[in-house]
Length: 220
Image 1 (cartoon, one colour):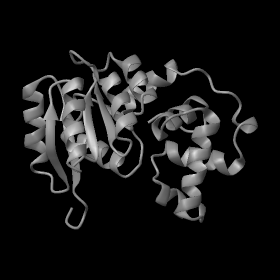
Image 2 (image 1 turned 90 degrees about the vertical axis):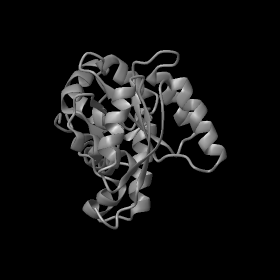
Image 3 (image 1 turned 45 degrees about the vertical axis):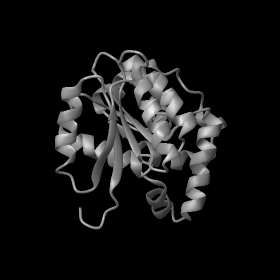
Image 4 (image 1 turned 135 degrees about the horizontal axis):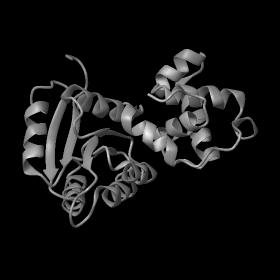
């Protein structure tokens, strides 16, 4: 992927062997660089604070959700509050759908299963970096069952905002939404922000799940 910007990634997982495995994989990926790691959420917050002071924050944090001291949900919430420019991708097991829901409410940009293929891991990091949505299909189906049934979108969103919501659910970036609807990227960004505000959502990932639950987009 020559010419692509290098995405700086920080790993958070309480298993050293998992962190080593991810480091080994990313060392072979030209556009992703691991700049640090931590064994739990509190250690991650401490490390990120030091990196922030040095002006060296990562672009994306890859976050295990079940850890001692401070779990991934609490750590995700703190990261999004303290370092809003840093995206978080949650790692989960099949049985932790409710925990993923909490992570999304805390501001995680996406999630995938721990047994995902290495290429999908890289794709999730790239999607988060580009402001896109990455939903693991298996967990997405579970999560849609946990969401409260949304109100009628016709009384909440404009026609254009509904179009934008559908494109967000398809994983489109602001640039791609702008191209498809023949509007400026700034206008696309404004529409996305309006959708999130009107629906009371915190992230594009939550918006995508909302659209699936409302029947505006198919589950992955």
